[in-house]
Amino acid sequence: MSWDEFSVPPDAGAEQAPGAGAPDTSAGDADEMTLRQQVVEIIDAVLADTDPGGEWARTQLRDLIEAHPDDPEGALLEHLIATRNRPASPPDRVLPPDVGVPHRVSSVKPRPVPVSFSPGVRKRIKAVLRDKLLLTAFQPINELPAGNVIGVEALTRFVSHDGASADVWFREAAAAGLGTDLEIAALHCALTAAKEVPRNLFVTFNLTPATCHDPRVPATLGGAQLAHERIVVEITGSPETVEGLSWADALGPLRWQGVRLAVSASGAGFVSMDQITQLRPDIIKLDRNLIEGIQDSEGQRIRAASIVELAHQIGAAVIAEGIETWAELTAVKALGVTAGQGYLLGRPSIQPLDWSAWTIQAQTESPPAGERSPLR
Image (cartoon, rainbow, N blue to C red; front, top):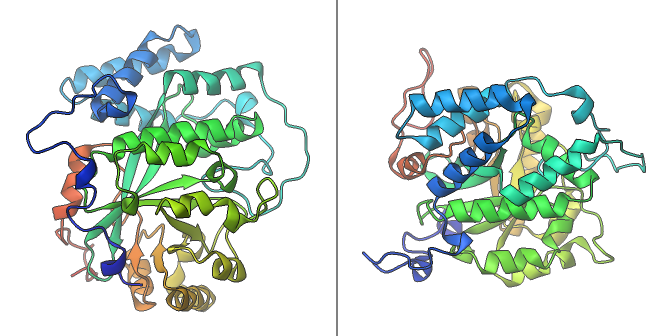
């Protein structure tokens, strides 16, 4: 499948956008919040917190706002980075590895192990749902071998004083019975932010199979001001039955809406070749577990090549995730991988200016000394 077939034309979604020069009049609707409004609300909520344990975080955020008075998005992003680097609190954050994680889950089938939480865990998750203490970063997806940005992946960021990763939040929510609620809240936030992503880029959103079958998901997607041909739902989780339905049947409502589907064929929670053939996704992803050091591993290259061949047979595109070196990029290009994603090509950003710049950044960066950029 070529990206000419898959990519969104420059005017896609225009039918849902306000007319030229006309302001959006539905300002009272939560879906009409701009990214800055989201960020300001999150900052206000953090600063209004009275928990003594979070005083260091409030002080840090105030200092960053003072340093960036005209850039609240940048201040909040620096705050998130700093808090993620701060060690989490072990008593509140230790969970069995078997508990399902929506965004990168274990391929091992969960065992019925009781999960103990501190009394504050469920309360924190409900506070996030109530106060919308989350925001969305987007990471660029580059066409290969050309290098131009053709899409983005939506990545959830949580505002918390302990800096726990998104996977930890989703794991806790799933174990507390709030996993689907948190995923849908993250989807709503990402769809709102995606309105500012250039219309020629597709956008991928991560959901578990169970959440995909929740009736709120089609309704949320249907109410989004984002053309459905731009939406890609990446299924993150083991392909088990959902409420008695097969995996493919559970995803039927999304297919009917014209939403495209992506699955991972490597790493945790991967989908087997037979399952891929049955589901026939639009995109197959190769995760960091397969891409890391692929230039030095014949076994990894053979496995990746077999996935690329399967993709050709079913008409799917292939995206290699976690590309961090020129050598890895050269290797995946040689395998005929359709597109790439990773820190080498572009880091996640919450800045709309970055999202716009990705569309005009064609091959402007030079490779490290002594290496030739394969993007040129």
